[in-house]
Length: 201
Image 1 (tube, one colour):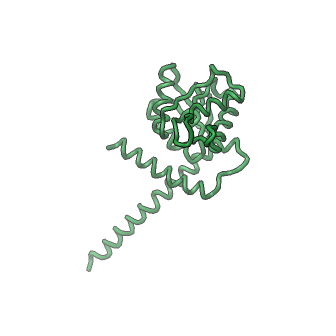
Image 2: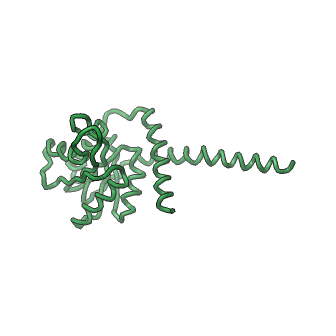
């Protein structure tokens, strides 16, 4: 009979950890992305977010690019690095689509770099690091949507880079829909935990 209170307590602890830990993690990740941490850097890195069927950046990616252009105009970095490989929607890579939009906004060719091999944030960090290392650069200013920044920063720091970040929403007049925020918070929390587990084991 004495085992039942112990089992109930263990069950409550398991349920609490299963529900509360992810919830608090999601809240933390959301709050982290609301703060602008932009700092002068060697390069502004624009994290990919897909392309449209006509090969132009998706709505989300274009928002990130516009914010990066604002930071570039303010002198935060002398160059921009676009990231993102090929998708099934169009034969043009995300990186190439981003670079094209930068050129259309008057950024000189000498200030534009891009990689078009990556398929996810972890590979964004890897291939950006290779560009940085080849040129002797050390610090990056990441631009992405707010919910994405905590995990992205951690992945770029894993390569020994000095990292700051700035949420793309700062240059947008409209907030993200709450459904999108919740969905992305769940995804980001799970993705961060999975990345950490893979690193540990």
